[in-house]
Image (cartoon, rainbow, N blue to C red; front, side, top):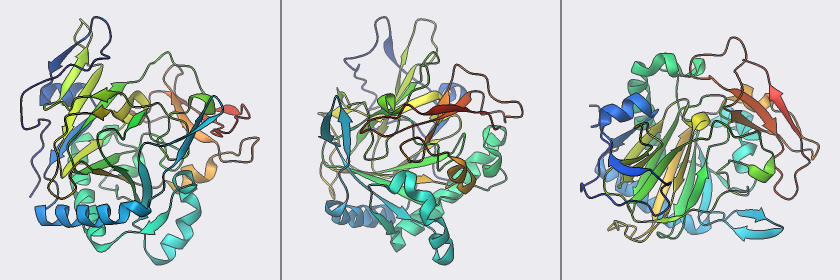
Length: 351
């Protein structure tokens, strides 16, 4: 049985974020508008209730041992406002062979084998992504078509309360490949999840402007918001969707289809008025299920620091000839050393 696809919270009440751009306004966004203009969708109650609750209990118990990353700005080191780890969903020899390819997310994060409940959840989410992706075949990366998507690992973030956040970013493309599909499961307290359209005029950046959420890298600070109780959009007068706020309750899945990571940024702002959960209280755990693209991870060059360069999208450059439909932008590799960039970057001209 396919879970109900929805974008709404439990209340129609809307609150306008304090930092909405001049001349923009918050308005309700329908499911039809979302499908037409935003390459993401939301599935409520994606897991059986007992499984979702068991998984939440396990993760909350495990979270005190997770890693709190650091980011550096103007020479000062700051603690990340969340803790993280990642769980491998591979088995046996496959797990051993792929261990080096996870270094883009695991450099400073503990790598753990997924417990049984997480593996069961991953199987359900794999099936949901494949079935919903069947209607989006032309937009999917070739490796994910024909029901080929299956999560290799889950990156976990624990937010202790409404003051712990992640700023606007795109997920690292180096281990995922171009135009990846990512499934994000929210467990515990209700939080706002915001998608913001990326600036198409933004020039390529090195580590000084990195757009990664992997712990240990530079990132934007989250802004404080009240939790919206229904998805809304920040729209210019012409009506084009500029940002979308999702109210993520316990056991809600957001699927970020291509080209979300290239053309949008996502964040979890600070929130005063959260919906607490009877198991976790004010705490929320997010699991992002990702498919490892070993070929993409292997072809990333080393920068002059000796580290693996990060693959990023540039919306102001045409794609190479032969690129598939969803990848209508250029890509480049850049240094991501937040202790001091070597300045390395180069265009990626492979389709």
